[in-house]
Length: 168
Image: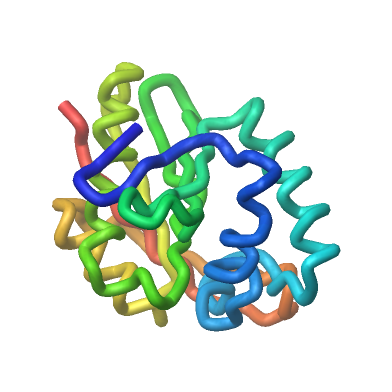
């Protein structure tokens, strides 16, 4: 799948270095996500193996910058009920935020869901993630509700906001 600036594709083992340096090793990227920072290259090589296995059976992809070919993030969706899709996370390395890439990714994910017969699309973000909330609104999603969640990495509670768009 492609946008003007990005390619979403399945991970390959050789992507471990760029995804590690651009995303997995970055605390500012992990801040609003439910995963821990990868602390060294050995962990990154193991993580790419798990990522490849996961992506083999899920609608999940690495995000590649078209110009550089580097893996700069990841994204995915899942069908939770017939014709109802949820994003399963969108992450970009900090150097790639603020370039319009998030909007390209979210719009592409929704188009993909439409191609699968999707009728509703849900997007969730932590209440403190103002850039993610702005992204949802800029793509035509509307706020639905909030719920308290427990972060399994930190053990702290946080407020999750859920947004929706009808795809018909």
